[in-house]
Image 1: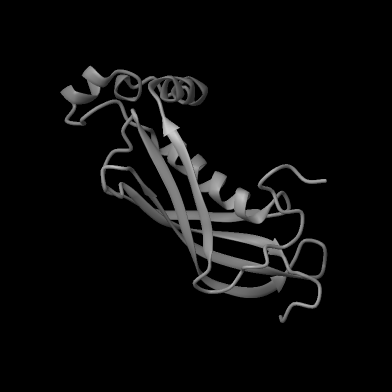
Image 2: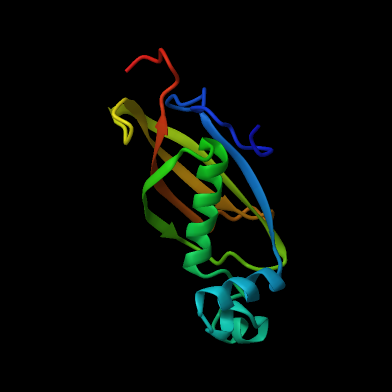
Length: 157
């Protein structure tokens, strides 16, 4: 039995134009402090809104390591536990991911090709565009990522 939201087999929707789904996470100040501490990123702008405002941001904001974690979270929720992320980036960071708002991670498959997998059978190499957005209409971060996923038995290669 697999965990909720985790597919044990190859994603059936690994085709160009398919969605990776949407993942929504609330970006609270507590979460930012926990992430900053775990990353040993003690820049005040990641945990203190006043310090962030003094630096030109509207509030405390997520660091780039957290941005990568959001990309990884979306990819792994879509692929299931057998997915293997092989590349993340390049990223375009256009604005701040600010605390006090939700962050929506969405992705769309841009290419799929068959490659030799780690188990000797063909796997799918999926390249996707990922966007992080917030409810105020901004899309602060976009970028690409590549992930290997096992091919479904009998899938075209």
